[in-house]
Image (tube, rainbow, N blue to C red; front, side):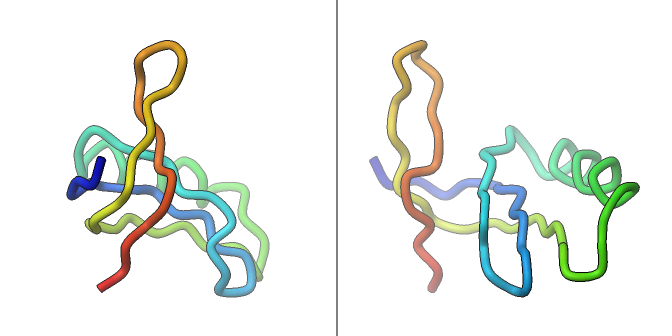
Length: 70
C-alpha cells in the first residue's frame, strides 16, 4: 500500500540506515530532539514527509517497506 507518511530517518555517513513511521510531525521532531542528545559526528536524524510503500505487521501495525523519494 502506497501512502504519504511522516518518517524519522537515521542517517549514517549520509546513508539511510533506518526509517521509522511517525504519527505526526510533532512526534517526529520530539523523537529527533531526544535522539540528538547522544549522537556522534557521522550520525544524523531527520524528519521527512514522503511517499512510502507500507507493509502490515503481524500485530496489525504498519511499517515502512520502501521510501519513494521524488
